[in-house]
Image (cartoon, rainbow over all chains, first blue to last red):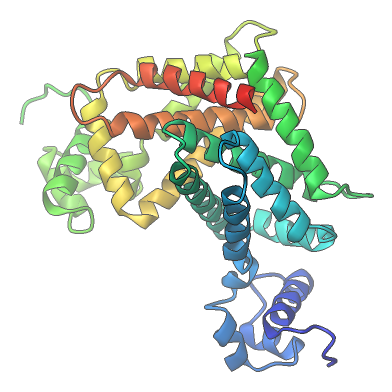
Length: 190
Length: 190
C-alpha cells in the first residue's frame, strides 16, 4: 500500500468507511480495517477506542474549530452572527470538497440507532460548548443557550440537506447560509 | 395504601421517583417500586418495559399533545407561531403545577448519562414529529425542519431554566414565552 495518505488515523478512517460500505458496519472487524489500511490492529487501537469511534473521530476537532472561530469574532458581535462565523469556519476548513465522504458516513449513521444516538450526544456537546463560549463573552441567559441551540439546529438541518444532495452538490457553506437566512426570516415572521 | 391516586401507572411512577430520590436510581429495584405503590411486579411490567421507562413514560403523551395543538392552529399560521401554540398546550396541560415533580425528575436525568441520552432521543423524536406535522401543513423545507428544531430548542432551554428555579418558580408557560421572545429578538438582531 502506498504512503499517499499522510496519517495512520486518516488511513484507518478511510479503510473503515470503505469496509462498512462493502460488508456492512456490523460485519466489519477491527482486524479487517487495519489490514485494509496496511496497518496493525495495535495501531488501530492507538488511534481509536473501538470501531464506532472511527465515525466520530472528527467531532472534537469540529467542535474546537467552531468554538475557536466564535471566540475569535470581534467583541460585541451579535451571538447569532458569532455562531454563524463558527459554522462558516467548519464548512470551509473541514467540509469543503468532502461531500462524498460526508454522504457515505451519514448513510451509515442513519441506518444504525446506536450511531444516531451517538451523533445526538455529539451535537448536544457542541451546543453546550457554544453556550459556555457565549457566556464567557458576556452573553446572558437565556440568550446564550438559545443562540447555541439555534446554531446547532441550523448546522444539523443544513448538513442533512447537504448530504441529501445527490447530483452536483453545493458546498456546505452555501447550504448553511441558506438555512441561516431561512431561520432568520422564520422568526422575523412570527 | 389508599386509592387516592386513581391510576396504577401514575402510582408506580410516583413511587419510583420517591425511591430514586431516597436510595438512588441504580439501587432501586422494580420489586421495591411495586411494593411502595402497593402493587405487584407483574402490574409494573404491564405498564413499563423497565425501570428507566418510568422516567420517560410521559414522552409519547407530551409529543402527541404538542403535535395535536400545532395541527389545530388555523391554516396559514406562521410555522413558529404554530409551534409556540404546541408548547403552550404542553405547558398548560402537562406541566402546570408540576414544578416539583419536574425538578426532581430532571435532577435524576442530569446525573445519569444513559438517561441524558434517552432524553436527547426523545427530543429528537419530538423535533421529527413537528417537522412532519409542518410539512403536512404545506410548510416547505428547510423552513419546516428549522421551525421544528427551533421549537424543540426553545422548549429545552425554557424547561431547563424552569426546573432550575428553586424558590417561587414561575409556570413553565411564562418561561417559554420569555424564551420565545428572546429567541425572536436574537435572530432579529442578527
